[in-house]
Image (cartoon, rainbow, N blue to C red; front, side, top):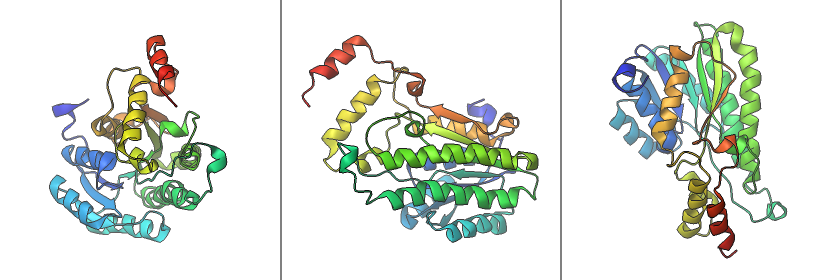
Length: 274
């Protein structure tokens, strides 16, 4: 269900989206608002977050998800201001420095990555569930990554944090199912956002080269967009997924299904200087 047929399917629902000032979070928040939900846009960037909320018809609440008490206050804000909470999207996340070799990683950004990505998602899940379990259930959607599903070189702390989100979400889904609270993950991949650039200190040229490889290794012949992720989130937020919990939904053009580079593309990559 997309387009006009899904316009009103979140009417009467209240949703919180973290990390929603831009990128995937903004796309999700905007899609929810279009579908009739009352949305709380949350972000650590107050200026951009307030602007985003105003543009999509939502309300803004500043929160650093690495601080569990701020996540608690965010959920309370949604309940007190809008009257409840039916959908919680734990999207806020950061990447880390990409090292040529694991031996070069000094773990200087490990605590920041795990605090935002893993602890922030756990706190958001817990605080949302605390309300939902006593108010008829709800949907919790946690953003992981194909980097948490498939192994790969580089950004190991990031990959570990995203893999942790998957195991946590599946485990909590079992714990909360009896209360009608569904917990699912979306695993985006090969979608241009600013996150990749934040991992690479050597500029736009390397980012462009990395994206070119990503495009070649994506079975579907196009890059993904925030709208693709937003449609997956809308499905998991809606009553259409009322019998779905504990799943990980890749939105990656098929990349996590397996290796798909064509022989001619492999030859081109092999010819590239290292």
